[in-house]
Length: 283
Ligand code: A3P
Image 1 (cartoon, rainbow, N blue to C red):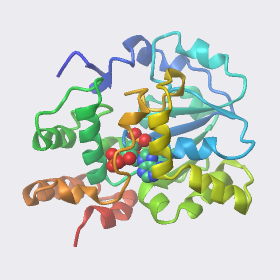
Image 2 (image 1 turned 30 degrees about the horizontal axis):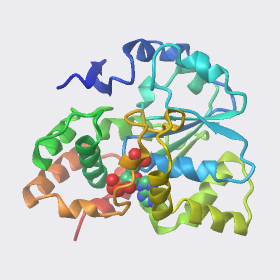
Image 3 (image 1 turned 90 degrees about the vertical axis):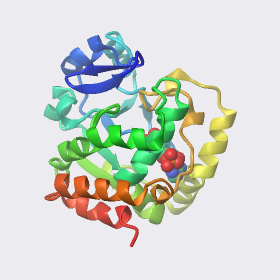
Image 4 (image 1 turned 60 degrees about the vertical axis):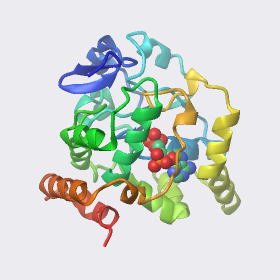
């Protein structure tokens, strides 16, 4: 596709994920108290990371993504003295073995795939680390074929859905966070075992609103140590619109039916698919 991406076991990765690192994922030594923040790109990862970081006295260090860098990565992660929150866009299959053995807590963020596709389209266009697509139509075709970074949205979600009810896994829906932020926040703090009071909650809500995060991104310097998505360290590329349902402005009726047909086929037996339907239908 371009020199910016490379295929590893059939899946596209950015050049910031070295083959050596991907090869050595299973040698990562997880700690029992590690928290993994997992998502398909553009599902709300930065938002959830910010929420966790804003919990008072949380005592964690947010690291860069586990798949970002080269083979020296795990030595770096070993040096983190505090409890680690480790973001990643990896599918379930690629998650290091010790994370599964030690049953580390995993927060999986999911967003309806039509909005995810539109958001990823803009990311492809604006992010110098990704090849610029010619048109929305051309990009959507790649998205549906799974010929985009981290592969098919459907395969990613289905790989994780098998573990949705594991006791160490929490599924968070972007749309639910938008609809009832406090409810989602309570889910996060209950799951991770942190206490927050009402004044903490309103403070967290304020600090992690889209407008607040967007304006902070403009003020911040680009800090590679604060990289959440392995596709960029530049937070100015992340905060675009932050709404539910923007897809309606992009999909033609024909694209909609192609999408819906694939969605029905892939998500036929998926509970998550049923939950998301409300957001992929416009009528
Ligand atoms: P849009 O491109 O639709 O605006 P990720 O963090 O996984 O890369 O996801 C990025 C998407 O989440 C972008 O979607 C971004 O605007 C949105 N987002 C980031 N912070 C948000 C917030 N605080 N509230 C709502 N949406 C947010």
